[in-house]
Length: 450
Image (cartoon, rainbow, N blue to C red; front, side, top):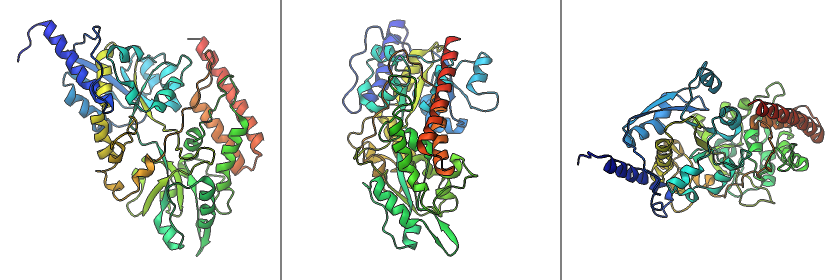
């Protein structure tokens, strides 16, 4: 039927938007009736500029998002700008190019979004279109609100594969006649197993354990934050000492430590698949994509702390952002709502192995990796068997804090000092506190100049 008048067109647009938003109801029915203010024309041609914090290629972006958007919203022209030399966010802003929709993680949210003056609170859009925010995993919402001083909803969580698990090399356990790791192991049990699997055989050193150190500390299961929720200083030094000592003891096992000359995070988290002489590794699910076909691997749940049973890592979600400068916020929100719908997240779980950002209800999470060749026959339930750790606590109003990525690096340096340079943990943390204080002062100065 041909639509010839504006009133019918706008009502059709509202219905289309309702359809896009309904999928995010998490199986609890469509959102409530659209508010009277939601008079949106989704049929008008519009060009939207997308920018990623990551070095995603256009082909990768299209596979995950672009092709879906074009099919659902044929009137939308996508301008995806790949990050590279001359196209970083600072370069774009300097040249007068302002993104409409961005996506990234919380570690770099300051430099990528907030410090650029691009952050936009989507709360009004959520209310305007009765978006079912409660369908999303609450930890993700708490995390994004706690990322900024105003507690604003400046992002909505994307499905990702940053949940941490314990990978293991089945061939090495078979070689030495040691039973495989199991779901539900504690850190103490994993440590004992790492000691058994660390050995020298036929002149070859076999390491029992490795990890993605920075991510493991950042997304820790005890939800210990870098900064004190009530003051611009390091949070709970004794708790950070406990986290560092817990992980550090694995690197104190004879023959299991890293080469002091190779401190790169990449060097350590690729150790599992690089020479295939590492028995176990705690890492994010997404790393399986880098495993060579000859690696005989599986996975179990991340080891747990006795004081936090059945608790996984903080989920480390990525987020969609609508920028403050975006002149087409309604259609942008409709696009994001569609990409977060149960329909799309189910497809991404099945075909891409992504972990939904929706609540873990029904059979949605059981679909993870169903159509992914590398995940066939793997213990995928290890990804969602535990509840995610709570978001790090919200900081008091008025506290500026420091750049999250700088804080992360300071804690990684502290860990390296303890495990590679044999520095006392409290001394290493005092140095980290001094570095964090500098980061805080730098951010305060930047805020004052805006």
